[in-house]
Structure formats: structure tokens, C-alpha cells
Image 1: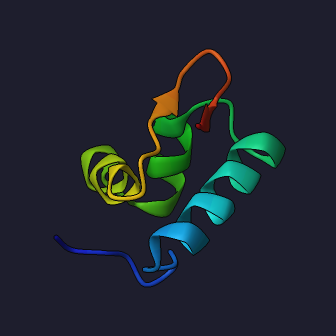
Image 2 (image 1 turned 120 degrees about the horizontal axis):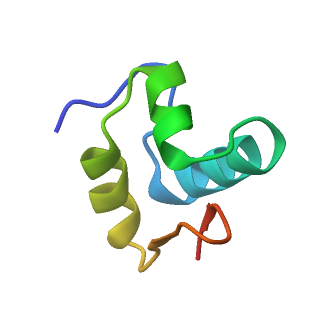
Length: 62
């Protein structure tokens, strides 16, 4: 799994970072991933390791 230098590698820190970015700057996970050059599936897999899934309606990982 290739992770991007701009993104935290620790799942809990990644969760916090992404949810903050989604709340403040991006209307969707797709927009976030495009801006950061990140892969949606890699992020989702990393956050599933700590039992979080993306909720499209809320635009955040829960």
C-alpha cells in the first residue's frame, strides 16, 4: 500500500486529519482524494483497520 507523504500514516491521526479536511474544505471523499493525489480504496482500507467506514451522507468517516 503506497501512502502519500502529505497524509498521516497512523490510522487514528489519518482519521482526524481526513474528517477535519472533509468538514472544512471538501464536499466529498472523492474531492479530497483528488486534491491530495490519494487513492480512495487505500484510505478506506487503512481506516477500516480501526473500524471506521465512510458515510457519504455525512461526508465523514464514522
